[in-house]
Length: 390
Image (cartoon, rainbow, N blue to C red; front, side, top):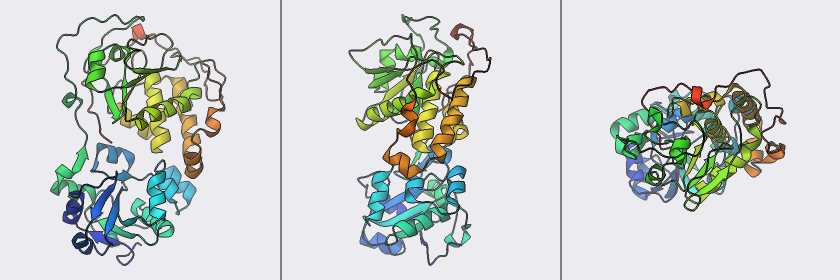
């Protein structure tokens, strides 16, 4: 058990006061002297807020500025009860280097609803995270937020980031003007008329129709497009940045050989504080596959978890059978490779595949699966799911 002596406790009202100080970095808040005493004794300085809940729960709603730890079942199994900072905070090199350097005066951890430290199970995510923090940053005070996210949200919802509706950022047009798409079968299904969906604050998923609507792109402040098709045109090359991945939507296509290049492109747009729309023809198979690969690589989640996350936002996604097989293979590579090694060299051997849409990769499944043409796709007339700020 993690005892009270090992793990301090913090009331929700104290965290609220800390958040009021508006920390300058993501996941940080100020710790003045008077709040330090109330929080159980952390020294004056900055503290780090860690969300120990699953990725989907964090994405649906979290305390403002918190950093989500990654401690899924594969990480647990490989760690055998002892995880490292690199494993639980992948792609957060600055955070764990600051932890090791003792730059945080306190770390506040929270789960869904644990009321007291003495109630935590030894194999709980919070317990694993606390042990990693003790081992790698033993000078830092650690506090459990009493009552977790559930209590904090019930008392201070204004300090939480909840899933927001896409309608708040773009209005559904009543009359859609015809747009010359320049590629075959570019209809305007009902679910496309409301605009692309937000996967992450800098990553959007949509269709060729969206890519041809400059009004939608400008409204969402899109700065770049990732075109996952060989035949959809780039309509506004003088206005937006473009990258093309010429992959067909069929069971012979090797989309996995493009995963790392696509991920690096999305990251390059993010690093420039831009926003990227990933699209294909219908926004169902190819572009969805790229978004799933990005979530799996950068968020260290399993395919099933990433799929549920994206489908909640765009309900019609359906990567073809071969793409799903390639994503499963990618999952095994991402989640079973040392997080520390991948953080240092994110490309690694994954980019040894040739960039061709022919089946040169062992990821490709050559089963005789018929793939519907875009003109035969049945569109689901259901409302678009809400988007999320993560």
